[in-house]
Length: 320
Image (cartoon, rainbow, N blue to C red; front, side, top):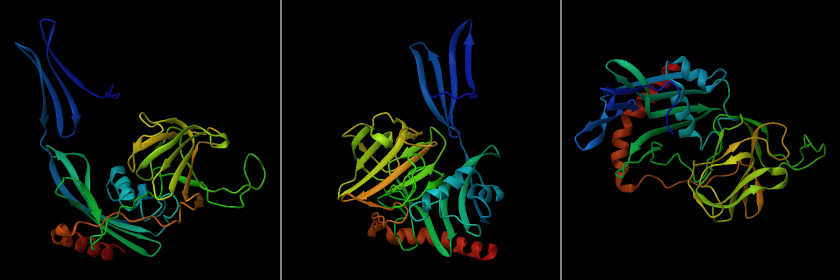
């Protein structure tokens, strides 16, 4: 059920009988199944990949994707930048011509042939005169997170935008003319236009308190995040597997998919952020910080990240 069109499967047979099977699981892993006297045995083989580190810079003219592509990097790196800085920058609304970035990232090669972009090691982003910096640090539990030079986490308790790379089709407005009802009705959320089927992510960790149809919202998910905070996702097509009343969801987890159920003129996500029952503008509301790096690892992080930040600043000055 995980096979994709164009994927190659290698079968080995002898005298009409299957004796072996191979499938590439990822650029670094291959599944190998072999028949022996007792039946079939399976192993996952590691494919050695060469890692090269590259630093690139660009000024954004029309879109982040175009600017990243102009450096020779790929969409994966553009998405990574949006995910790293997405708690501080709304990439659907805040990006302006003249914004710029510098990014140090890994490229993966197999036998000298490029495979794909790897992890972003550090990045600098200039947005409307503000400068954001982040470096990757792998903590003792094996999880990688991004921190500022001071050790502050780039993460927040909530995502600023619950869908990737969309445009705002209707902002928070208490005096908006409704496009269908043709009357003044407060728009107490933000609409993100996106193609049908675009995944919708939970803005923060919490427990689902409602799933199903609800009037003009169409199909909707409501998540209770405690401390009086509730997020609402409307006009959905369908809900992700396992999302039901009472289920726990993690930040960034796919909870549903975009469509245009309810009162909607086109496919989009309607997103609301409420605090103690009061509607807040999701684009400007203060988002609670995540925990900073553990103090016992701070010195190690600063030692590892210092040369990365120095490279970012030097390349940024040279480019801009």
